[in-house]
Length: 81
Ligand SMILES: [Zn+2]
Image (cartoon, rainbow, N blue to C red; front, side):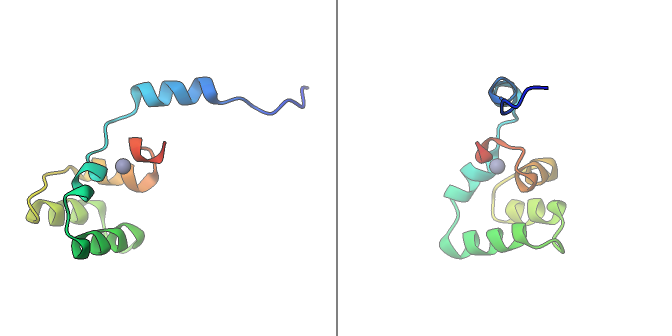
């Protein structure tokens, strides 16, 4: 047993390399202040499905997959670096 703190840097480097590109951040930059606020609230609400967020973003002219929304929500995307 070692009491050395775990070093995840090697794993994290791999995660970055294989990590999916996240278009949510890019899209967010193009939104109006109102849209951003609403989007952030939607992300924060468990009652709002990722597929619904994707659809609304589509209505706003930004095509995105529900998978991407989900990944962003779980913090598994490039944004959480
Ligand atoms: Zn993201």
